[in-house]
Image 1 (cartoon, rainbow, N blue to C red):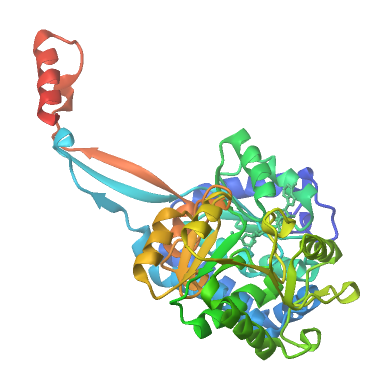
Image 2 (image 1 turned 180 degrees about the horizontal axis):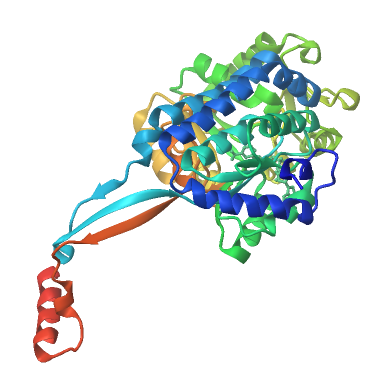
Amino acid sequence: MNVTSMISPEMPVTGSAIEPVFARQQARAIQLRTSTADERIARLRKLQASIEAHRPAIYKALAADLHRAEAEADLAEVLPMISEIKHACSHLKSWMKPTRVGGTMAMLGTFAHVRYEPKGVSLIISPWNYPFGLTFGPLASAIAAGCTAIVKPSEMTPASSAVIAEIIRTTFDPADVAVFEGDASVATSLLDLPFDHMFFTGSPAVGKIVMAAAAKHLSSVTLELGGKSPAIIDETADLDRAVKSLMFGKFCNNGQTCIAPDYLYVQQSVLPAFLDKAKAAITKMYGTDAAASPDLTRIVNGRHYDRVKRLLDDAQAKGANIVTGGTSNPADKYIAPTLLTNVAEDSAVMEEEIFGPLLPIISYNDVAGPIAAINAKPKPLALYMYSKDSQRTDRVIAETSSGGTCVNTSVVHFLHQNLPFGGVNNSGIGNAHGLYGFKAFSHERAVLRDRFSSTSMLFPPYTNRVKQLIKLTIKFFS
Ligand code: NAD
């Protein structure tokens, strides 16, 4: 039977449907070990061409799944995908070059280098919030590294999942890249298999399930997770720029962004001015009635609408003030961009990742307060600092930990291909993007060639002369 027919969309996906594809990929992965940069670039270019050809379908799917505007689809999905692919094509030859490492005294007479070899068969499980970018970005890295890949898009955005599947099925032989659509049960069947690398993007809770499954086969993992990313504004900050960047970072995709500013500390002396400017910025972006704006994405589904609404209701019940927003419409999965002040520390909105259009704002006098509060929570995916005081900025960076940090801007570090993109502990393990994505799917293999080393002089039998030599060697290095 032909494998393409085995994975036709009509068939329910079970372990027995996946296993023949996995077996073909294992055989193909061995062939791909010797693939050249040109061959991998050809596959990347094919992927880029297919994405370009499917752009109208991508816009349509994102509008159906998320009510996303075409401009936001271009900015937040098409641009990152295309730039990731182009960056890999431009740099792959130099990334693949074995790296010579310097000699050491003990290894005199040897030559050593590090080879980047493809890990083999990889699994890519992606989330719904940027369904295309967070599927094809990692896939570009897997192809650049010379891996095969099985892709499982999110079931929460079904129209996007269908277009992703079509792009993959019409572009690749399933022995190279295959796709299985479906929910957690499909992911569970996939996670049973001995993948060489698992690249997961999603929540910390499911990240733990993926890591536990990977442990069974000692598969390596990249976990791109989420969490609560804080932002701090101090009194020296350029408020106009800070507000513009924060309101975009927060309300792009209606707050459903892993690196969206989750909660915000504003120095007391500039709080009134900040709130005025923030309200004006929201009106400028989405008009006086944000529900009527064509540019505001909606909450993905009823379950997430209920979750965000519960966070809002709980905050209000515990005394939070609504500075702007607060209105909602379940039929439209709409919650207005909302700024909250006077938020109780024990409200759910300060404890759970918000992943929606609510921004709790807390005032402070001394930056030691925000630093201590941030350090009391799990390490975030991003931390944003708005200040002209470089000493205070350096202090915040030095005394906290986060996957990435922007100073005087937010979220755009995602677009910088020369920076690693990833979390730390609860917000993730490992990195994506550019060279870091290539390395995630590559094994750094140590290769040592012996030309005329004298290490054999230290081998048994341990005669008095050999023992003396070993002691002398230790003395030499002490
Ligand atoms: P999720 O963890 O619910 O789902 C992600 C993927 O895992 C989906 O494909 C889903 O089908 C699958 N899945 C769900 N339950 C599973 C299970 N029990 N076993 C195996 N697989 C399972 O996440 P989500 O709701 O799609 O996305 C939101 C989360 O992702 C947020 O926490 C957000 O911060 C995070 N995120 C992180 C990044 C990043 O780059 N670090 C990017 C986007 C989203």
